[in-house]
Amino acid sequence: MNSERQQLYTRRFEQVFAYIEQHLDSPLTVEQLSEVACFSRFHFHRQFSQFCGISISRYIKLMRLKRASFRLVSNPQERMINIALDAGFENPESFSRAFKNTFGLTPGEFRKAPVWVDWHVHFQFPGRENQQRLENMDVKIITVEPMDVAVLEHLGDPMLVNNTVANFIEWRKASGLSDYTTQGTYGVPYSDPATTPGEEFRFDVCGELSLVAKGVVPQNPQGVIGKTLPGGRCAVVRHVGAYERISDSVYYLYRQWLPQSGEELRDFPVYFRYLELDKNHPEHAQQTDILLPLK
Image (cartoon, rainbow, N blue to C red; front, side, top):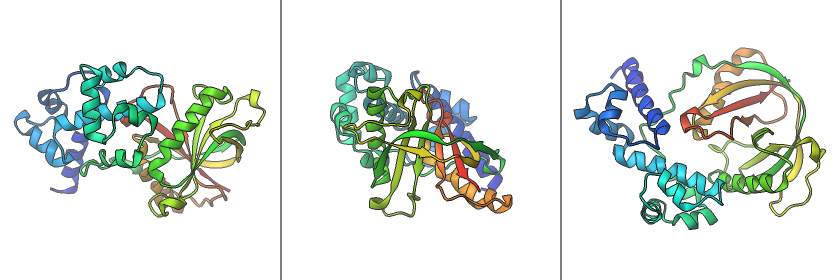
């Protein structure tokens, strides 16, 4: 298969993945999805399994369980029955069985102590490559002002960052000093997870402080502290899609844009601004600004 045909073939599957994520609350059939992909319904099931490594029905169930696992951790007060029904199960018991069979923990156990390392393994599909058109990414140069932020520092396995995020969300909700619906949310990776030993990986989970805080974060059980994101010139590009694929957009900035731009880097790491966290976007529609500090 030549490169152009391979790209077309892959784009068709990306349309299917996007459609599934947009319609997780609806019944999804092979006939329906084959029409989205413009493939014959007689062959689509085999094509999907070959491309993704698992069956269509298994993929859909995994996507529903994935969404449910995020809700379990990010909304600890939400009733289990609501999460179960939204994931397509008739009752909490069948949801609990499917969840444990997949992740090795019941939903209640995962909610109390999520094991993100084992969780990630279930969502690695060999055929799902990031097909963003990097050559068409719109890079802009902006000037940002210094910003006082609350920070929960993560040190260790990058697969466990979500545990730190959950603790930070708990602090934001309890403190009232950084409302995620009105104040910005940022992430600062001090090292590349692809090349850094797991125990040395550093990542700051950040939330913009409200004016009421006056730049001060009182002592708290979660260990959140105050810092300042420096101001200055930044190259910014918007990544649209799952957070797990953001490294592709970051590498584009370093490998392609920067050498051709004539710009030089400032002594502060690339960082992320997460957009519209108060909205329940499907993965393919998640938006993150990547900011590369410039001199």
